[in-house]
Image 1 (cartoon, rainbow, N blue to C red):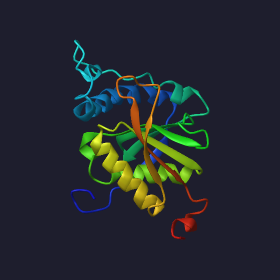
Image 2: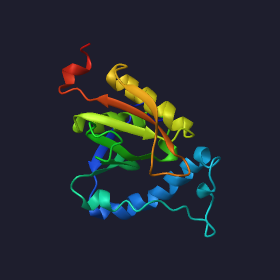
Image 3: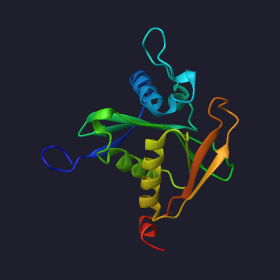
Image 4: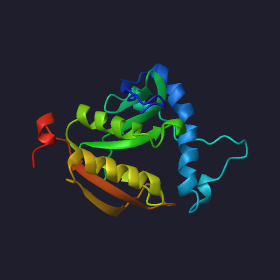
Length: 187
């Protein structure tokens, strides 16, 4: 809800290469947010000497047609981004939430949940969401969002990953999107 009590309109805008610099700049805030919880376990999350957090380069989400990038807006104001890929820990899964970020002013207001649900409705199939265990706020967010979307039809397990030596485990949520909107209410 907005401060005036009216519902906020959350929109997913397919991102183009012209959105890449903005998303890459927002990624600095994304890394900063991650450092609040994940930074306790690794020096890799320390503030760099120049005071600017860096992120992986996300350009391939804008140039590789096997990936998808979205800018999340609220009433036409940029509120975050979501980056999707097919790089799953289990080959039976179709989609992976590679990166997901909501700007601080929109966190805790249901914006992320609405954006995630829109993503899942656009990209049908079997999903995987992997979260660093120390990222407790993300774990709560994903579990609640996935539980609500799937009516508690998901799995959650901790898996070892080989791509992050500093934080070698992930809590992995897997679920299937319904093939039709009516399947959301069927049991």
